[in-house]
Length: 322
Image 1: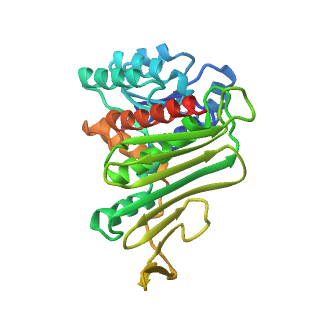
Image 2: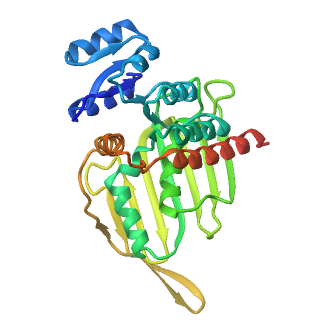
Image 3: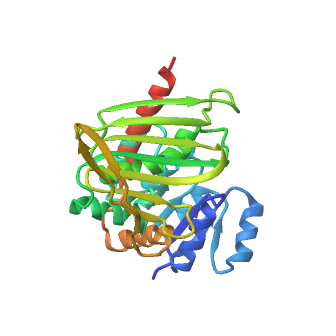
């Protein structure tokens, strides 16, 4: 496998991308503006190159693709430069902070015949793929509603609010599972730490099919929770990504009607097996394949735009709340 990928930005999440691309034998080097960071990574990975500026990485003819893990506010500029330089790009979520910017990147990638992939990692999670299979087979019946929560104490940001930091994961999964865009979006939030930056938001999405979805995100929560609940007319499924075992459970609850009154008939949870592999490794491997074989990514620019449109609708609703 050719070592032709450079990771740009090696902080909180970037270091995990570096590890995976290095283990997959595809990492040529890293790019970071902090000299001490470059020194540290050279010591840990003596076989890689380091670049002190984006322009240095883009000027290297051996570099075929960049993986962008810089702050979200920089995504548009970095990805645009990368595409204009004729390189493929994998950018962490969100693709950009404004829909017109995302559209420009998608159009540029198409014009330059370059791969543009967005890092919506949960779409590569084997548990999410299993839920999607169950929905497509009709195991759950018509989906009535979806509830997702992504809660923790930190990582608190001051340059973007909780909606943009946490909710892209949940939005991308809900759009994947339902295969449609919402027709109505309402979001409400609370700001407690930094002026103008909500720390907690609840977003409510209504879909043309009649399905509803709720997304609860917070970085001001006493414990960590990452949970997705899908309620169908036949079965309910719970994906608890924090649970040590039995992360995916199905409930075959029934509702009986007696004298015109609904009576719940609960059933035991049934564990659903799925492939135990690191989602990030699967995501990185997918990008390598897309670059090598010129395949359209599963989470391409169009998918990133869909998530961005919902994020903007949520943000507009947040700003408009009384």
